Amino acid sequence: MRVLMSNTTQYCTFYLDQMLLGVEVLDVQEVIRRHEITEVPLAPPALSGLMNLRGSIVSCIDLRRRFGLPRAPKDLAATNIVVQTASGLASLQVDRICDVVEVANECFELPPETLRTEIRNLIDRVCKLDGALLLTLNLVRVLEIEN
Image 1 (cartoon, rainbow, N blue to C red):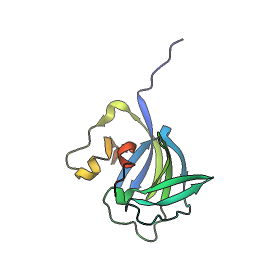
Image 2: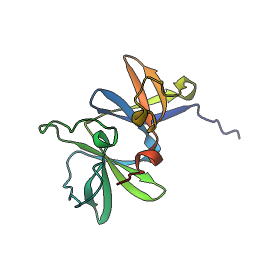
Image 3: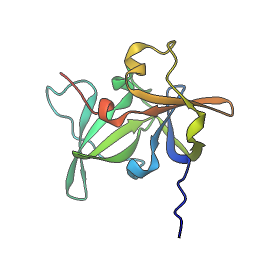
Image 4: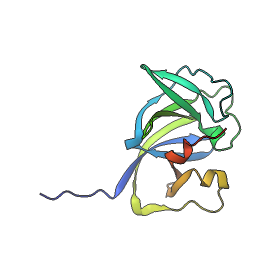
């Protein structure tokens, strides 16, 4: 019996401002539309707070702040993508969730030099999709938050 290796990867995609980003589906535990978040005094700006997710305390990362973007409009209700990492669960606050897309691995390229350095450092690869450029997150770097 032969095991076929897949040459595609599935991504949970979402928007931050006008950027289409993605995180591997295998890293996603769940997507939460609205959830109460408790602010943490003196926390770094990118840490929007903590959420209680069925008894687990989860750090919430404001990806807009992490990417150096302006705060979201007041009428935009953030969506949380809960991801599983080596150190536990984390929540990524995004503007809006999109589709799951499957992309052939050979379609990816390195992030272009035209991206701002702080964004390029948080991205692994890019892929041209129909009408959009998909930027894939490097979760390890995204979750490394300094004061």
